[in-house]
Image 1 (cartoon, rainbow, N blue to C red):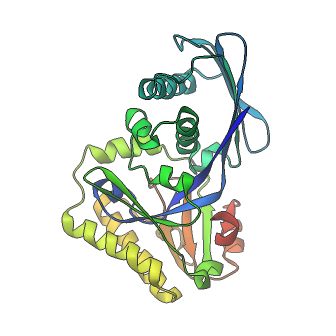
Image 2: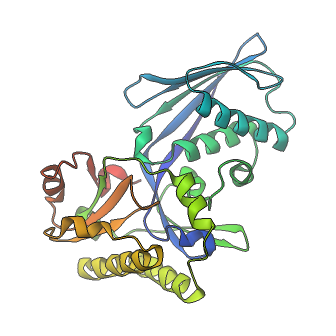
Image 3: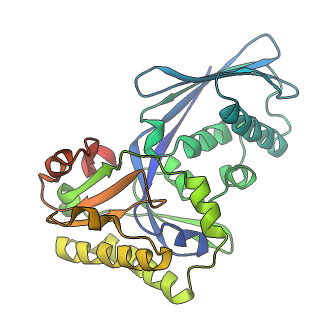
Length: 298
């Protein structure tokens, strides 16, 4: 039996603009997904997926040679998985020559947007011994920062230069961590759909990309919470103007701190920077899933 593991991810800065070359801060999470692969005698691929409560949430059976779906609990997920397996085989002709039983286990709720797809892509890439970024291009698309987080042991600065990924491990100032919180919005955002909508538009000029890159660099170096708040407010204002979407901080006008959207705007988690009892503030407003930085990020 073989075992693989990948970290989840949070995109702190550079949402959308990272696709156009801006510097982005990626944060690997303490939650991730593991994958167990076992040989079986018949020419089938048996797939079982379990959630954070060890409950089965997906299963599928493929024919080994054709990758046709023999049976499944969710046809759409099976079709996406088939696409990944086929692309993996295209990238490595020696991959998937014998029957397999695969079991995946998530440490987080798949609705949270922490990387159910990216951790899967990365785990399958390690199993198939292929380049994960090449597999991403053939399947879901995106910048690839999430794959960099999947393998990172610390926060990263990520950028794309002429389509080539650049990953720099960085230290995040621990002085601020007690004031950083990640709050779930109680709804899942379709990242793939958001990216497709964004890529149909030309939203970022060079000046805007440079400003976002500068914010990313400055956030990494500041140890002053007021300066940190100013930077994320600036980032939020830029993105709100570019995307023509109201910033989430308008929902919390009485919060004694700053709030920043994360990843695809409209769902998943947001960042709160403020008092040490911030989780209580959001729980009173029915945002019951929230984490302190130290409990959430590697």
